[in-house]
Amino acid sequence: MRPAGRAETDSLYFDYPHFPFVRPAEPDGRAVRHRVAIVGAGPVGVTAALELARHGIESVVLDDKATVNDGSRAICISRHSLEILQQLGVDTPFVAKGLGWTRGRTYFRDREIFRFEMPHSEQERFLPMINLQQQYIEQFLIDKAGESELVELRWQSAVTDVSQDESGVTLEVSTPEGDYRLECDYLLAADGARSVVRKAFGLALHGEAYEGRYVIADIHLRSGFPTERRAFFHSPALPDTTILVHKQPDDIWRIDYQLGPDEDPDQAVAEASIRERVGLIVREVLGEGDDWELEWWSLYKAYTLALDDYRHGRVLFIGDSAHLVPIFGVRGLNNGLADAANAGWKLAWVLKGLAPDRLLDSYSPERRGATLDVFTNAGKSTRFMTPPSRGYRLMRDAALTLALTNDYASGFANPRQVTPYTYAGSPLTMPDDAGFIAGPIPGAPLCNHRLGEGDYLLDHLGSGFTLLYFSRDGQVDAALAERLAVLQAQDKRIDLLAIAREAPAESALKDVDGSLFAAYGAETGSAYLVRPDRHVAARWKRLDPADFEPAIMTAVGGK
Image 1: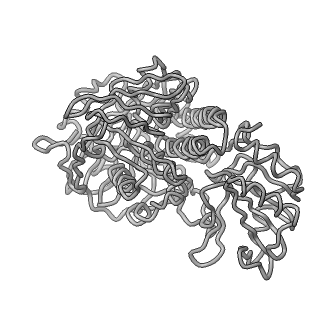
Image 2: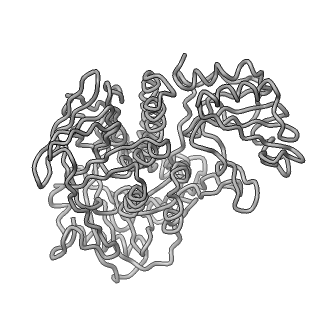
Image 3: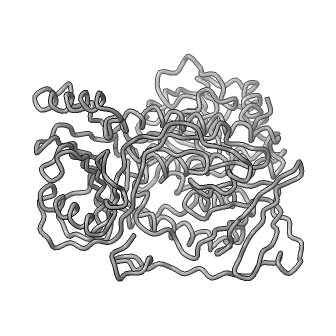
């Protein structure tokens, strides 16, 4: 919602684009069979299209809107998500525009009781988190998709029904110039919490709805306070309310505040009520004056809901169509981007004949596993931020009171920020080698490492599998090189990335000070097999060439 007298896209800081309807071939009777259709051109849907394009697969993306979503919505992008965006070649505008941060503070009444620092070192290209409004997130992704001949964006195209059989999926599409039918081999449903695709198949989300409701308000305010996450309990402004504050680009501040259990939500989102409460927060919590402008606001309710299975035949559900997670710990968007990367590479490999269809069966256990992990952590944060009962509230307030004078109690206020999920139990992941005492375990995402000025390990990964091989001079065991050559001749898309201690071969990377060997617990002959989404499929303290091909076959669903 926007203040009275302003249109839905009348923003104080963002110029909303207009995407015209472009008449496709289907309404004119020309039969077109698409390999992949994606419903929803939000961040998750367009990320999936870009991931498919990275592997050379065409897709058509349909959305009923004529512009990007209004309001800041999802604003926190994690380091892991930025690494996904780097693989897609679109990270630069995100980093240039976004506000990076590492720290968060929690206050009880008027005192700071907890401060957290997210892990960060010079080994990382990206900060742990950046703040960026969703309008920019969508715009940057759409701009990138517009540069690709493999992505077709169809705006003002509402999917009204979906059906499927053994050979493909059929969508009914409504447009300003009439209805048509679209056929595709596979469908990615990225159409959000009210997913039309999910409803078409009679599928339901299961889980828990929390009692707490939040108003989300964006305001324009010039303030010198640093970019960090701030949470306030029992503040002077709203004593019975939890408040969250984030700084965003363009002097826009995001303020989230909890409604009381007996408050009328319709009255709470009336403009006069928004202005009154935000004014109190600005003056009495942030310590600023009345020189601020109201930009946009909405109402939010916390859920932990998910589909029982994210695959339904030839349909894969990604993002909010598959799951709804609480905002606490900034997990919603980041979880959805990981869905898109996971589904995208697997679908591409199946469509290119590099993997059997059963590779897609691994999508649900991996990404639903990630969702359940989110539920565990976000559920704890949600019950602390918005206690669901009087008993929970008494315990929460007792912990906050203890934290005033006891450091050990302050940890209860930890928001448990999002971390990437480890696919340790995935059918694609090999058992670990007991010889390792350091490095990412099988299923975990690959760790970045600084190799030189502006040069990092993840910069050298391709779009297929990568064998990270550690040796003295970059030379590879002859038997291993022979097996690699055979697989590459079969178009298995496996790149060799050799790490050398000294005098490396031309194609190898040099570990200048030995820190990369140490970080990965490696010795000469050690190796990591890395999937296209940067997760480790297998690792060996000393790789026997005979063990390599079985690991590859397992990692592409061939087992």
